[in-house]
Amino acid sequence: MKPKLTLGPIAYHWSAHKNRDFYARIADEAPLDEVYLGEVICSKRAPFHEADLPATIERLERAGKTVVLSTLAEVMLKRERKATDDIAGLDAPEIEVNNAAGLYARGMRPHRVGPFMNAYNEATIDWMARQGATHVCLPTELPAEAIAIAARSARNLGLGVEVQVFGRASLAVSARCYHARAHGRTKDNCLFVCEDDPDGMPLKTRDDSPILRVNGIQTLSESYIDLLPELGRLAADGITHLRLMPQDVDMVGVTTVFRSVLDGKVATTEADMRLRDLCDGTTFSNGFYHGIAGYRRIAAAAST
Image (cartoon, rainbow, N blue to C red):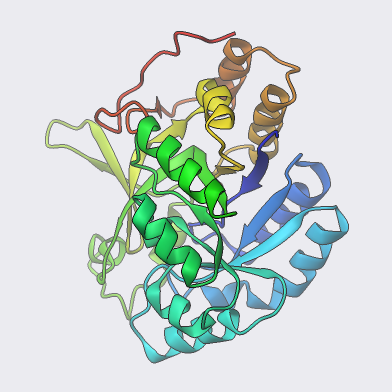
C-alpha cells in the first residue's frame, strides 16, 4: 500500500497572518493526506494562533485532509499542563502526544505518538501500543535498519508508523530558551524574538561555518532532511506515513514534488533537482538514515 503524505506541525513562531495564509494554501493546493496542527515548541506562542484553529481545521477537512492535533514537546508550567490536558481530552480530531504529561492526560484512550517520545525499539513501541497508541512517528536519527525493524513491530501490533522525510531534524529541546538568551533576554521576557527567524536562527562554528539552527527552546539541524531518493525503500519496509516538516520555503511545491514521486509520475533524480530549486541555498542531508553523521549526504545509488 502506498504511504500517506503528511505535514507536521509548524515548529517556528510565524505571525498569525503568515499562519493563516500558509494553511489556506495547504488546504487548497497541497496534495497531502494529513495535516498536524498545534504548538509543539513554546506555549507562549499558542495564543497567537488559537483563535484561528477552528477555521483552519474546518478548511483543511473540507479540502479532504485528515487533521491531527499535536501537544507540546515539553511541559513544565501549570498553563502547559492545562493546555495539554485540554487537547488530550478531545474526542476529535485525532491527538498526537509528544510528552509523557500528554500520555498521562490521555488515559489509555487512542492517540498517536509524536517524534519527541523517542520510540527507538520494538519494546518501546509495544509498550506504547498497550497505552493506547494507534500510530508512532519515529525519531529522525534512526538508521534504515532500525526503521525497518520498528515498522515491522508496529505493523504486527496494528499501528501506523511515520518517518520524517523532509525538513530540519529536531535534535533537542531545552528548559531554557537560547533564542532569547542570544539576544540578551530571559525566557519570560523574550519579546518573541524568535519571530525574526522564520526558518530558525543560524548558528556557526568559530571558523564561520553553519552548523545548527535554534528555534526558541529547540535545537535543529542546519540542513534539511531529504529522503526523497529513499521513498521506495521506506514504502517496501512498511512505513505507512511520510512526514514533511514545514519550512520557510514553498511547501506546496515541496509536497507536489514528493507526491509526484509517490505516484510514479516523476523520476527520483528529476524530482530531487526540483526540490533543490525550491530550497535554494539550503543543504540536504540523509546521514542518519544511512547510519552515519546526520548532516552528511549520501548519493542514492538506485535513483530512477
